[in-house]
Amino acid sequence: MQVYFDNAATTKIHQKVLGAMLPYLKENFGNASSIHSYGRKARVAIENARELIADFIGAIPSEIYFTSGGTEAINFIINGIAKTNFEESGKNELLTTPIEHKAVLDTHLNLTHNGFKYNFIEVNNSGSFSPTSLIKNISNNTSLVSIMHTNNEIGTINNINKISENLSEDQYLFCDAVQAFGKIEIDVKKLNVHALSGSAHKIYGPKGIGFAFVKSGTPLSPLLFGGSQERNRRGGTENTAAIVGLAEAVKIAKEEMDENYKKVTSLNNYFRNSISQVFGNKIEINGGSYTSPYIVSLTFKSEYFKNDGESLLMALDINGIAASQGSACTSGTIKPSHVIFGIGKEIDDANGTLRFSFNPQNTNAEIDYVISVLEKIGQQSKLS
Image 1: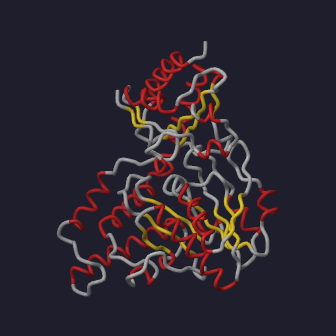
Image 2: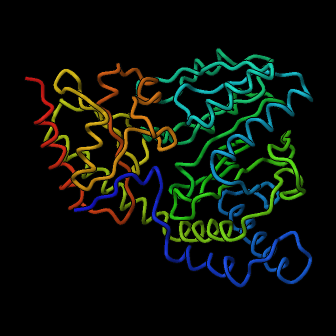
Image 3: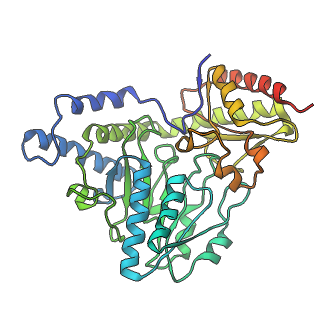
């Protein structure tokens, strides 16, 4: 049996998405910046997509900027707000958590070369940020707070809309919503955020396209230069076909989101109950009680198992199962995740941590097969 339980890394493109894209790869191939009919067709498609996405998250179209994906959106937002706000107010302190996506953490690190400082808001063993630590770390010099909506490795959902209560008018809140967008309701007004990132390939759209929401009036400067596209804030010819694909994926998500959520919640519960019956207290499911049903992160406790992350993944792959240890963006070398360390795990437990991420087409039969394979792997790696 072949089982794909790595949907948090990427999803299979939906046939309707592919169908919507093809005309813009073939006959409607024009450059949206051109004034002739070919260009106008592309421009109309892009602006229709912008309106659709804006409506989906409670924004206005002019607040949506298309990017090459979630990573670019994150870089664009953090750099753009931090640098522009510094020029306007002199604020140079940033806040984030130690378990954010690497695109967030590495952007913060890079900004230290430009005179910025950043501090970490503490998280608990479930991956939820500490409100006390947030308040403690905010100062008059704080410019931007960056906290993800749903953790991409352990699925923890943060209480985003409570953060802005502690920010002044010239302090900004950015939410990386890549793992939440299109899966649960995202309303930028309810969340009370100034900026938010999303990506297509997590919701059955094409790779290489995402967007940044930036609230009107928020200080922002370009990341890429060399063109007047995206209202002079993102140079480069627009990827019309991919933008159309993103819009189609959003359209499908809007129609199916509630039903998909129910299906995946059922799968999640079945997985948790089934694996607990097999392993009992020899495993720990990470993320606490408020997590996305699309993700299950579990740890084989090192007091019972001789953990080896690479061997775990290879054994699953040999049996036709796709899973991961953490973010696909840190793959290439098999090493424990910074997120797992960030929630307090020691290296031996981190080496025994796996992420399984679902889609609504997955089945209980697939879960049964995966758990049977995990049971065999567990027997082979059990400490004597």
